[in-house]
Length: 187
Length: 243
Image (cartoon, rainbow over all chains, first blue to last red; front, top):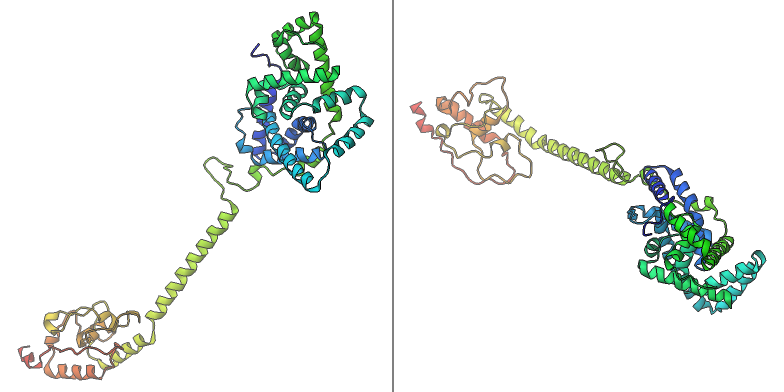
């Protein structure tokens, strides 16, 4: 079952490469189509990674950085995986900057979480809140691997490329995350 | 919620959720699901997690994202070969190239004008006119600047061209006074060639003619401004009888 992924994946990658080539040749509409194809996935990854504010800005920054360094994309992974790699670096930068600001302003971390939970309770039912909380309790790496696997259906190889780990480690992170989520729901 | 012992099938559940399994693998997974309640529960959990994250994700403003995107390389002026073998220069490089060409042309024009002005300086004009007035009988072709040394007995004439006014002012001061023949040879008056240095030697002149010539030469202003070194003319008038 090593070659299980065969439906749609290759054609998606081919279409991405085709659009990149068009954009390089001067077709701005190709960039629009690339944004349409991947913006939602980037937003999901941002939210599931704990980003709560300015998701649009993060997605925008990801695409700007990607197009500015498009020569660095050599097609060794899919374009979406490469975008996740960029977004992940931006997320880490944001968290570092936010931590410095928080340390400086001496704001308690629980305040933001309380505000977020209250907002979510308006728009989501209890099951979804429990699932979200279960995912939030995962370690950062487990959460990244789990959400990329569950929400995007990415292979372990793609996840390993995106988060900078090995395929085997990604598999272990996924199964540990799944066990932790189940335990959290059983409490 | 329990875990199924078939880890291989469990590993495929997210891909089944996203419809990314090929037909053969998908059939195997579906067959397992029909008999495994734990895997069905896990698949349902995955679907709920996915739905929960999607519900939490705000809709991305695509126009906002696109407005900040950079222009494609082919539109931003970088070196892109629109035609094979032809590379467009960056506009900044083109401006610098234009400046270099303009500076080179200006330098050439200014330098050429300076040289032309020096060559047409007043000293040259004055000396030519003085020479022409003084030696009305002795002229020479402008193209002939050398007179056989055996006939005039003077030192070699590296200053002949300067006497004619062709040398720039920056030329070093002459060390040898120009001889009469040099002056005559470099005087450009071809209309009345009484004696041509190219086809007639001074030795053909009579004694009286030579004396008159020497007197005329003595009246000439010193062409080199610098103080000349004494020079001894070896033209021996007493030998003119040999002529």
